[in-house]
Length: 165
Ligand code: CA
Image 1: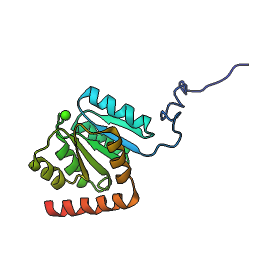
Image 2 (image 1 turned 30 degrees about the vertical axis):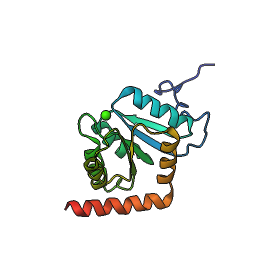
Image 3 (image 1 turned 90 degrees about the vertical axis):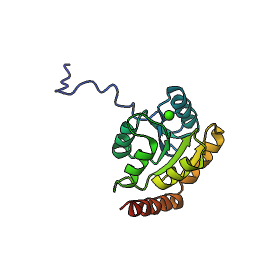
Image 4 (image 1 turned 60 degrees about the vertical axis):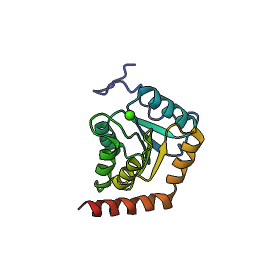
């Protein structure tokens, strides 16, 4: 018997949607924005082991694209990035009608108070200084994935956009 497959190509990759074997229902979708490859890989690995679905971006431009197109639940954002930095990405997200509600957590090696103020002014929800205990990162992510925290972030983002004008 001849099977007609029409114009369709191979569908063999059809079930490769999410790496969900260990955790069928992810606790949330986290976009990890980090230009340092080893750090990005470590973050992705332990977040997936903790039950989150993870997507990655290695510069500011692709972070913005992924935030708009994939709409994660939360963004873990490095500050120093190629193209445009974490502050610029955060400002753009807060000014973007469709995604301004996203929770944004900065994860940075910078500790000086001005950087923290800049990050808050840009609209971040939280700021973690590297090195951070993995359990602490998970706890902060869980906090910002709760509905109330999201609502607060949306309100805060709107307030931030108003101040800019
Ligand atoms: Ca960096």
